[in-house]
Image 1: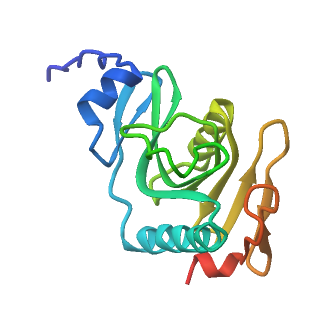
Image 2: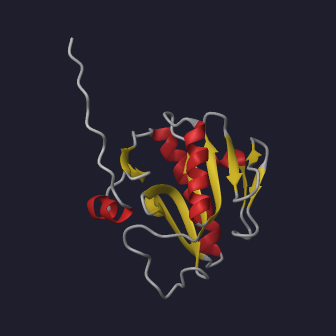
Length: 186
């Protein structure tokens, strides 16, 4: 039986990726390689919607900034563009009178939330969290439906793990944000 050798993937810059896939979802650029993401399913969508809802409620209630969702692109490196489940940027970083950027937003951003898909190894989300942090995101929250827990990541700090029964607060970036972990999974 003959084996087939596939050519290596073409390496792509963030700018070229955005020209080709600026309106796509389900794709990211990881280390210059276009990566297709599998559809994670309904439970994942519920958790993503809950995360967006709780962040947006605080941001809009306090007129603090913009909340984006649905895999909005975040430029992380010259060869990296990630699709954040939820992201938040304050009016102090992007004033209300300026339009939301078209294509990918370039950090700094205050917050990015990712939700672990059934096919995601946990290590890949930890790596993704640190990629966001290295790009200038202040806080990354990784929600894990399998364990009904979440991790809060900050640059140069150990991640903090929250479990069912805990309340997540982010007073430095979202004053008034206090959400019981269980609420993300309802």
